[in-house]
Image 1: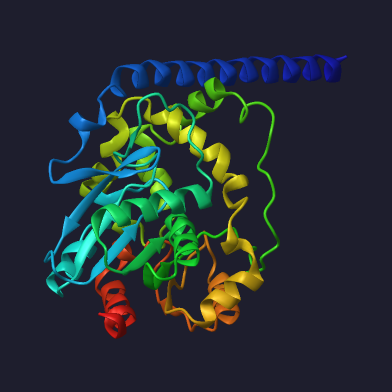
Image 2: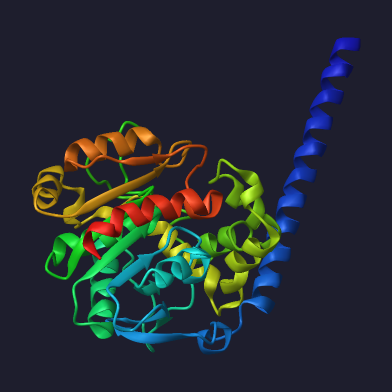
Length: 342
């Protein structure tokens, strides 16, 4: 009898705790829906930094920022997940001081790139992003450019270089997130997860509003990408959060996440190892990698280097975001990579 009473007590306790947990989750989600509806209201023209501008790029007006001499050789920077043109921090100034004309772009849905009037759901696949990138470059310069892509931004940069090799004279990939396997294997591209919540815009927007765009969680999330947590400073966090005030930011971020979860590489040439190897044979490619990267492990760099005939440069003691974890070593590696093409 005593055992039965104990079991009933345990079951009731579990029920009460479960109900409390559900109530907490519901309250958290509800509070963040209200927060986002109040915060995510500013049009890009109001929220964007005043030193940038928008250029025609197909179905979007891409936000770009520029540094360095107008007549210098051109380098185009494409950022990673959750980043934008403002999160390169010291890198553009470093390159500009060395004579480069630096163009940092905001790939949609990040930063302050504007969707054209009437457009709703954009195609966020790598090939489409690459075409937008090439159109933006065409609007900015007639000269062949060097491209540098970090993390997610490496995919569109690589795809653009393969689509129009005459426009991209050299490519630098920094901890590229190309959808490779843990050992660098290219296992092919597969559609992302389907069904609820990914197929419901309302559901995925609610998830993003309760996680990725909650300012209090920005530091927690960013620290998962770095090896040196001290690199995640208040000033850097403020810069990462800056686009959070954009109108419908969480909704568009959810749309992108639904694609990036698996379908990002559909239709992309850069997922074909034969095509990639053939392109790399006549291309100038540099690979820079954080030696402690757990997001895109160094084994991927070794395999990608073998496939493309490139020797990766591994920066010791840093993770997935070398340019904020050890700016001096990153800049030294970058300077060496681009010295031969300036």
